[in-house]
Image 1 (spheres, helix red, strand yellow):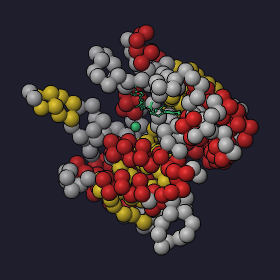
Image 2: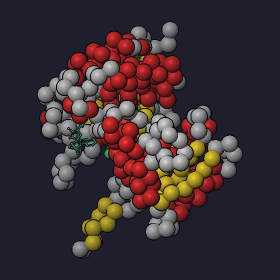
Image 3: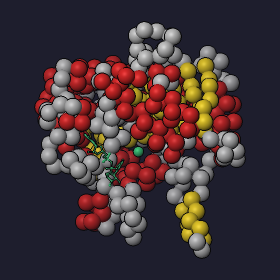
Image 4: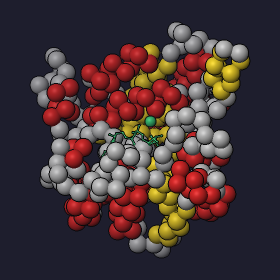
Length: 345
Ligand code: NAI
Ligand code: MG
């Protein structure tokens, strides 16, 4: 039997509550899973002076796969502190951030799910945002020049082509086979022009996949009003970050949204949400985002689509059956929802 190794980094805040649930679910579907714990985050920085110890890097490398909760990052500059997730993305060249949203049958999701003149039934929301994960405004090049605060937005043709290939490969295996390129090339003709042209070039190798383009502001409006028009969305780093939060609303919001950071060697799954200090320690965080992130690791890193589907069905089955935490309008605890998911997978 194949053995699977997973580095487990709970991080800060609700990471300590949701990651153990996701680990339990993974152990259920993968009996041959070896778990290697590691540390990162704000508490780790306060204790050791390093938010991402070298030992953690080594353990992630050794495993090739990690499950990461969230960290608390200060919003003002703290000497010596850098967000560990951004560091990990650069260190392991995790150039693709996959952020799917599947429509949840909540009141919110229903209201926007109707397309006039197309059908009397709401089309389900089933989209995936493919976010370039190493460049753009996350290049870390920020400076002060006199009174000017400057951030450099780095885009290369090579990085744009490789994220485009991820998007088109994904689309070519999906039912709708459609990619939307999202950019702002009208205002940023050099950086986003480079991105758009690179993606168009890759598109030419996928004649079966339909392609369209949207400016990022229009894309945000469509994501909020008619999310079912999207299948695969490919975009630059910050746009992908923001748009995936917009899209997440259709899937039940922050507590449900999953993500996978993927490179050629290493993949790190992490829920989209942060450390949620407002609810941390109360046992009411939604474990769905962390568990669905673990499912992305199964599907896109280990190639275990059947197991991934099993986990996803269990999560959506539990939510449909009414096992909902407060963020989804319920009153169940993290533990109760996790138990309901475990029973179903
Ligand atoms: P957040 O995602 O932690 O919280 C936003 C809202 O969503 C809050 O109302 C929170 O209660 C809710 N929420 C988040 N996760 C939830 C869950 N599992 N179940 C139910 N509700 C949930 O974002 P916020 O408040 O902007 O940031 C808090 C801290 O997290 C900051 O220090 C920030 O830097 C950090 N952060 C870390 C991220 C990461 O490690 N990848 C990503 C985003 C924020
Ligand atoms: Mg974000």
